[in-house]
Image (cartoon, rainbow, N blue to C red; front, side, top):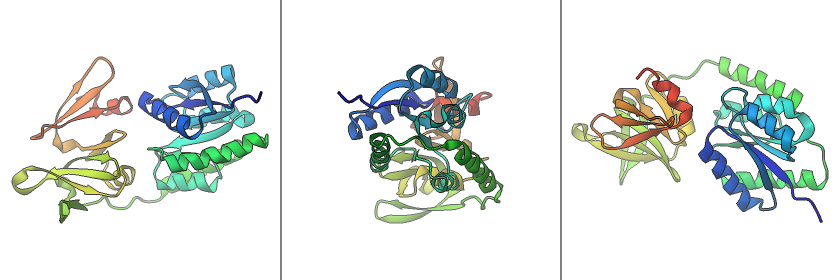
Length: 263
């Protein structure tokens, strides 16, 4: 009887670990997830304990990163990096021929990655030697970050019903991902709360906004710091943002709590 392939998922966000596990169960039901890690150090320990065939590693994790875990694992498993990096980093992954997924993970992209992994496992092909590729990736990322950043956005063109709006960025309270669209919550006529939609993904918008004014507080939300009334923190390492003149409450995920330590 042929042995089932095994996998490890490493991500510091429990909801994203669960989401990837569910997606993998749909596109690769034969894969058995034998371990889930919350950080790079745990990923290394669980890899040594279970020796899975495939590791899905979040690039950014507290403590040791996915890159650190990849250096330890080496060629002993097939590696797939899961990244929320900007387009410069994605280009670097692509040039390095490393398997990668961009958050939020799309089913079609995951299916393509799984197809490649199945081929490698069926052919008993050794895992890619990542040492040189990881060094190249680090150099490419450093080069892209040294490039002067473009000026922040001042206006966003968005659809509000049948009307195309030109929304001043300063009037935006928050931005959130919603299915196929990105919702822009802003101040309309007479300062009243209004919403409009754009097709630009959240990860592209955050790269174009002024980081001194707009911060990401959740995988699916960006907030204008000037629009915050107060932040309510809770004992279970969660928090909620209350906005001036709006009834909506925005969740803050654990990854972004450090932004409000002093608030």
